[in-house]
Amino acid sequence: MQVVDLTHFLSQGMPVYPGTEGPRFESANTYERDGFQETRMTMYTHTGTHVDPPAHLFPGGATLDRLPITQFVGTALVIDCTDLREGGRIAMDRVERRRADA
Image (cartoon, rainbow, N blue to C red):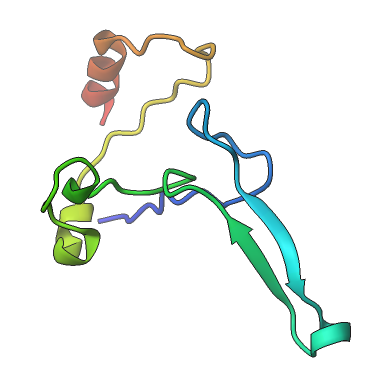
């Protein structure tokens, strides 16, 4: 089995959910002043790659620490959509064609 990491790097100006402020990074400590370097990050929980646990929507729902890691591993189908414009529709025939090739 090939494992593919889908994590996106956090960076200034990265795409975020419409209406949400993007992440901010500012120098908190420097080698020169403090003897070490540290960056302060300010961001919303929906920034970048993330998982919404049931507790996000349901009071008393499970939090991520209560979910087994095996729940986050599975099979996938990679579909090249680089030819689509933003907001373009991914039709099922594209999915079926790729599934047939796999």
